[in-house]
Image (cartoon, rainbow, N blue to C red; front, side, top):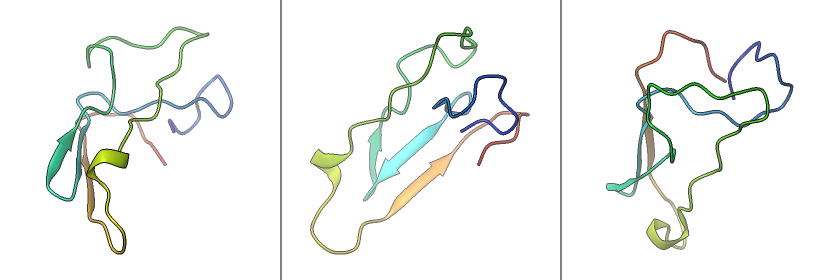
Amino acid sequence: MLLNDKVPFRMQWPHYADLQVNGIAVRAINRPGSQLLGANGRDDGPIITPCAKDGINKLSLTGCDARIFC
C-alpha cells in the first residue's frame, strides 16, 4: 500500500514492481509501470497460488519508485 495515499486502504503496487515466488516471476500489476492510478483505481493482488507450495515459501519483491510503501 502507498503510504499517505489520498484514497484510504487502496491496494497500490510500486512502479516497476518485480515479484518472485520461489524463484518464479509473477506479474504484480496489470498496468504500465509509468501509469498512475486515478482516484477510483486500485491494483489487484497477484495470484501466487500456482507458485506456492506447502511449507516455507520464498517471496521477493523489488521496485523502483520514489514514493514510500508499507
